Every structure is written in C-alpha cells, then in structure tokens.
Image (cartoon, rainbow, N blue to C red):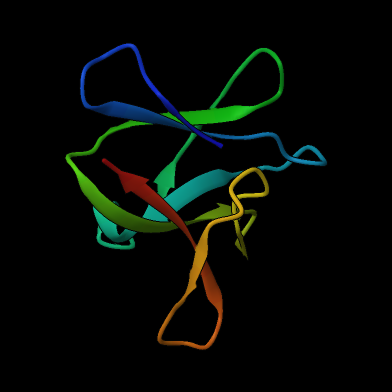
Length: 91
C-alpha cells in the first residue's frame, strides 16, 4: 500500500505480511533497484517513507528474499524479465 506521508512530497510504502518474516525490503526505480529494509511497526506491518517527485515509479517488496507485488496496489506493469512490477503514479 502506498499513501501520502505527512511530509510534503513523501510517500509511505506499507506491507502487512501474512507470516512473521525475518527481513522485509522494498526495491524500485527510486532506489535504483537496491533493496532497502523496511521498519517493523507495532501492528506487525512494515513501512518506509520515501520522498518522490512527480512521475511514475515501479517497485516490488522483497520478503525473506522472495519478490512480491504490492497486494494493495492493483496497478502494475510488465518488466524486462517477463514478470510484473507494482506501479505508482505521482501527479
């Protein structure tokens, strides 16, 4: 899930995993596809706030080494590897 954060120009990515993972990261074209660890919250979700200017961005979550689409974002696009990436567009 992606929501606008309280800081101007910042968006919060959130994942609620189905189990108790050891490591949850996000990677996207805004991180040059380098996995960035997300912070675990008291409710069991994982979040990361990212400053994003206007534009379209592709991303995926990585849970214990497994790539996952954002289950709360149904917008996606085909990547060069023949799989899908989640897609967010910032107006």
